[in-house]
Image 1 (cartoon, rainbow, N blue to C red):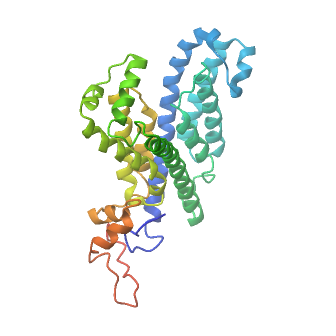
Image 2 (spheres, helix red, strand yellow):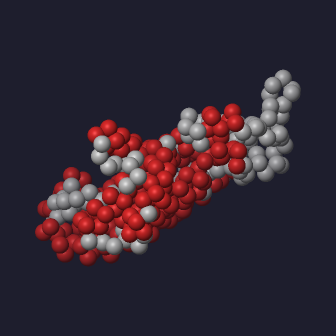
Image 3 (spheres, one colour):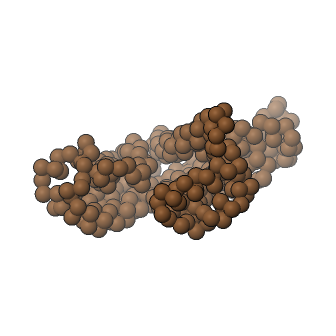
Length: 332
């Protein structure tokens, strides 16, 4: 699952640096949460006028017995205030839990029009996961406190990547089924083009690059197969910090592509991918092309045999153990 170790550093050599990064990540997450909740204030206030069209989901079914518009406004306002409190006092579990609970209600309201909108789902699960951060923000945190914090962040990363892996698994299974039945599917050269053309007919949209991709099938096909690879093996990247930044940008590119080709937007996904992966607390300070290639899921074991090890990564002669470099080395 973890691939090749990127450096021979001691297990706790980067603990303090990773912990400092994690604390900043949590602060920025709740700042972004307050901003997202603020945007929802206006959105829900306007759509509350269409209350007769709502089919309230189970978390907010009780709203049907109240005056809908004031109740919706109060919930959105509470979510915003709890987001600000969690930002200011990120060490208080109560505020983190209150934000997660209120955000669940706001997300349920957004999805109470008879359809499912995935816009807030991942953000909600992150908020739930961060409830398990250790309580308090001691000025001199113990190693247990630091490790508990980093374990919680790592669990959130794995959860987020599992969503993409499930999407990739679905694409893979449906693509294989189409190949077996002789139909055009995800692994067919014209699979993406057919999907885009069908969506354009259904929605009446004209995405910026859709026609170009439809007309250039052999350009679209390798891009789509590469996307399935990135999604399918995303969960393995949770255990390979040297790939966090690369996969973060790859998935951001995927969401950019969904707008360019299908006019589907996921702005919250850009935020959490940048926070949890591009700015991952576990990202290395140095990268090498070989280190990235040998860590690639599925291809890494083969590439390790083909690519020679660098002098820094080669085993030392002192009993087969790697030599631990001084902590002043930026790579540690």
